[in-house]
Image (cartoon, rainbow, N blue to C red; front, side, top):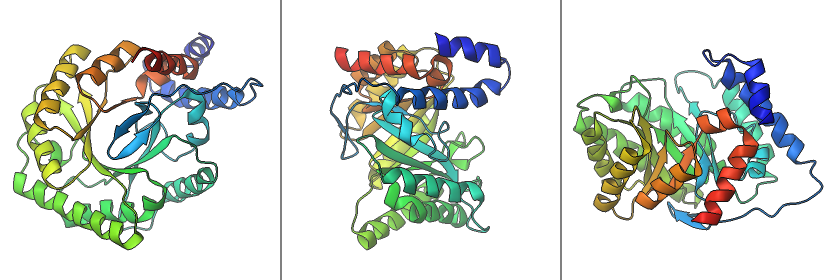
Length: 302
């Protein structure tokens, strides 16, 4: 309540200021929680997905913590995992300052890493699914491999060819094969396996393309898919779609994000077959304390 009252005073819900101020407020609230003299035991709900173990299935979606600044405070809210980024790489230019900052923050946070898993979302500002775009993603894997518990190839960029109404299946498959080949090379070179997933935008009117892309991802050896639901009328229809995918692609990790605002929403999607769920907007709107209560309530009820 205090968080929401402060946010309403500082921002206008009709512009982007709510997101700017929310970051600052959540940072302050999270740091203050460190001063609590009573050390509370974090409730856990062991979950396995992508070959990894999570202490609960609720994570922070990419977009909030773009430079890994928030990592030291995530455990105080109770997230089972945090996804950093999306980090856009351009191999034709010198790495920008934000990438250097992210690497520094990750190195610092890694010294005190706790049970929260880290995902790193990689992107490219190019829309074509060609060799240069693949090089951008592959460079991202090179840079962030040592810090990632899992890596994300973000294909949800609005103008990307991956989001075309009828994407070129051969072009997409060749692109994914390129990514997977480099991932395999790094696994062997660094003697470490880091699960690789793709993030897809799932438009309510274009679900057939999504299922075809998931089939390609599974064939190419990806560990799972993040489904970013856009413009879906309600959580029930989202759950129905996940249930359908779960039956068709058994053993493939499905991670849901979009439209999740409550413990009940999380429960419904997990019951339908989602391995993990991610939130973003609800954290911004409700604040860290209410989000912490939501996660704790889910763990007690599942």
